[in-house]
Length: 315
Length: 132
Image (tube, rainbow over all chains, first blue to last red; front, side, top):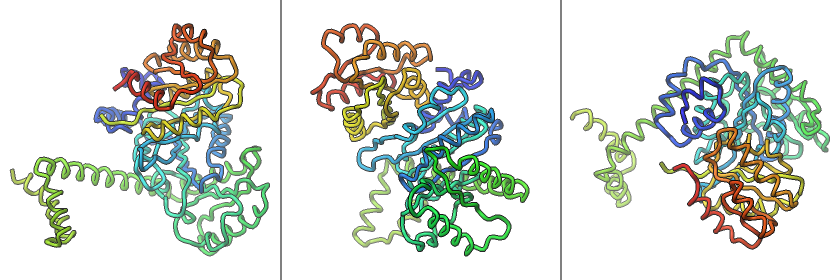
């Protein structure tokens, strides 16, 4: 398949294949992204996160339909966990998005986390770029069901939507550090259930304590499956975007996101290089044995490992 | 390149019984595959679009309603039209023996009838996907 030709003719098959290549670490994929990088940056990236079963996929489905009604194109990246034992995964987010399948202006891609722990897959960056190059106006990134500290989405999204549900715990949960701090907009889904108002109030109280003056994340009660409150939720997301742009924070956040990405790539490349250099000599396993036998400590071992790079430079 | 095989598990047609599909999906997961499960009552068009967007190696369909002679070949035909001719298509469910040759003729690589151990299906997919 000619990915480059497919990219310029707007073939979904080519875009889908390119994402696969990124996921599998194909160096050719990086070359193609490099060539097209100047086309990125136009799409708005909306992160959707929250605990398992909160209704993230249903909310995503409804929001995507809403932007489609406005004549915009929507891409969805939906991440589900990879098994730490088999490396396999059941990716089931599409179940809630069936009628979007055949919409020309929608592209949905499911991804396994493949070992990443922050609620995303490390290929999400790449997949976002592919969809951006492809001209999608909005890219929705749905994280795995999160617990308390999977916050990688905040490093990627322009707006983070936190989807909560009633009845997950007392108000102390709302004041803990972690995911509750990263929401730009809060939705209390399944608001026909008991305790929905209470949950909304607890989030409001938490936000009050944060003492934000410039921008205060709105909290919206919704019933996503019945499409209730979804338009108001969208207005809140738009409101956050307008605030970000007018305050200059939009660009700051994107610069921060780029910094994180560059450093991640740098770390990965460095690690790959060290691992490649030590492979023949099995230097690392030698160091591990030394640390195990208490002939060395792990801090010194790490320095020794880094010295491999200096030796390489000296050649 | 070491990569997980991606399989779309789909339920075309109108029957609402996906216990079998879920058991197969779970077994595939345990065999290290990434399984995209699309849920019940999918049209061939929906299945094919999902297969293209997800860039799967294999589409694995389960059907218990008797509509296999219509729906399975339609999926193969649509896949070919969309440039997905390198995607392996397999089927399962309650499929009468005499229908199997016709389905294979239409491009369904293999049919797994009730009682097939999941290992047989997984083995077939692993050996017959068309991409490295």
